[in-house]
Length: 174
Length: 174
Image (cartoon, rainbow over all chains, first blue to last red; front, top):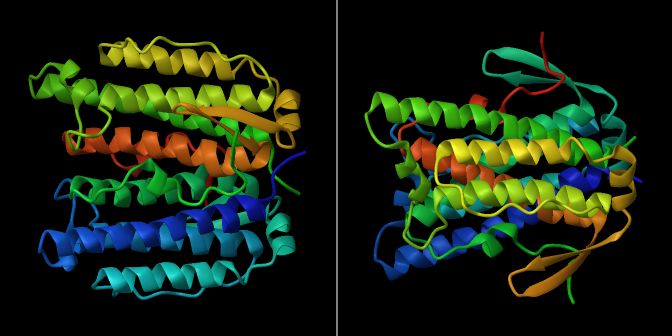
């Protein structure tokens, strides 16, 4: 028995992306309650040399769509990095979810054994699909997702790990 | 084709835990260069109601060892949460790596299809192994790992995503 690429990509990313839509709603409510412009979140950073909040969200969306597309051997849609509000970030997350829903399970399973080529800065890298998924795609996705979450936590938004985990599928309380 | 539980647990956790050992060395060097007591990191938080740095490290070690043990159907060693220095956190990470190295691949693969029971606060939860791994164990591990990393980033330690990703296995630059 092993785990499917579909569950490790489309299903996992889907849970997290939907969870982040709800987290962004909490961020908007926090801004309203404290009477600040929610677009201030967009440039939030812990340090001046860090990527800002909006960029973290754009990147984890791209991590999800591009890694899934590469493993399935299909073309991912390209999104302009032009979001200027929480609502526009929500729309990008929704577009990512919409793309993930189009990817076929059988195409993804074939990807585990294929060499995946992907850009890193100015370079091109190559990894076997299973390695790419587990040692590149998932750590990168969760890195930017958690960093974006942490910036909202830092800003005082009332979120916890339960919000981060979202609607965990298949869990039963005994 | 699909991916093995061993690669998704022992191998993935291993890469990240080793990467964090090197990150802790950078944190120690940063403290020395800026002439502050490195034990100050231990209680670092972004907000007063967050778990402190040392606890984040303890938890991601426990996420790695406990999820692997549950999937393999073996007993995990228990670690006291008594670390008081970066060196003691490094020792805990090393003990976690040592335990992971003892877990047999065949035991892990059988876990994907077994019901896993695990505590969450005062409750007991149950999930099928594959769901538990992808929708609970990995997101929790990366959540605490990235949060610990982010706290060091916030403290001014000169680390980047490359440090976080560590020695990515099987990657070739074209």
